[in-house]
Length: 249
Image 1 (cartoon, helix red, strand yellow):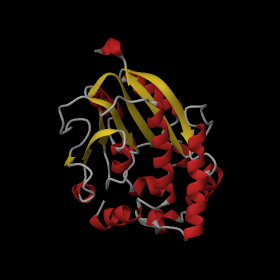
Image 2: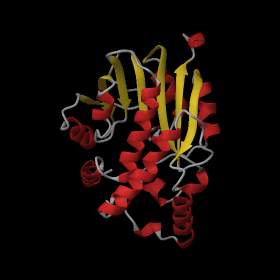
Image 3: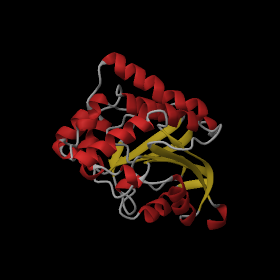
């Protein structure tokens, strides 16, 4: 991505309904984990750092990010020192963590199994990995292409690869469920009419009018009430919490 994309990303990440809603859902899942006091937390692929302040409420946070511009913008938040790195081979930390979060990152990586195995080596015994990814290959669109996605996932597919990487499944669910019919309809229509080809990588980052953004934030974030209570049957995204399989130690 070019610098202008990440500048726009950083400008809206604290306000845009999608980022705010996802952050509230992720935070709800983290609260359920009952992490130790002063937990050590790693965000792998932190983008421009919009999740770092939230994560810092639950422990000592470090973060890594592949893109140089995004890394610089994340450091400007002054929450923690963000270092450049990539999965699976360039994790710039040697510590082990109580929680690793990898939010909408795995779909960018050629070898997702190797990435998950590399993260396992940075987890303490009985610690957690929290993953989010985009759902359903049939929703593949120009949005995925210009964001350099390699794939989209079903919950079943994500569970399969994390088991192969040596994790035990905790809780898994689709999310962004209420808006799924609208998002799916728009994506499929754009694909049919080839309208997406006229857009650019930052198109989805446009901030809606304040009342609409507020409503969409409320609607999306309301799904956090169901997180860890039961699994939502479909959605635009997938969330999965897994633990390192102790037999693999």
